[in-house]
Image (tube, rainbow, N blue to C red; front, top):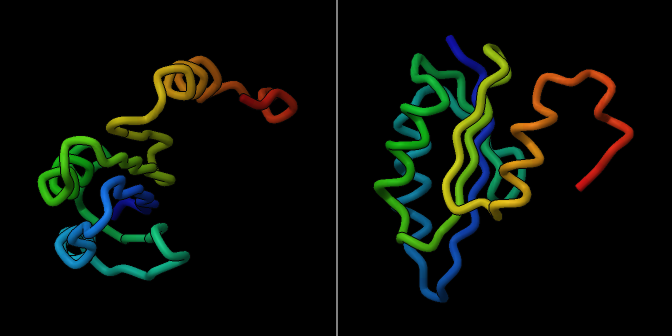
Length: 100
């Protein structure tokens, strides 16, 4: 099983949170950590889980799924500079001192 952390931002007023939450809960055993941060024990990879949740979101919503088991992540609509920063620093252990 994979330890997934899922975080999202629904950008437009009147968003259908229930649809997104239902998609997250469908991935496996779950716990709501914070308002829009979830932990899921899942057989899905980060990419597979992101695709499932993404289908429940609007095109401009953002999403990140982090697989803590396999040190992997998948995201949509994250600021380009932030995405590049994460890709550059993902596996660098000394990167903790530098921040975006």
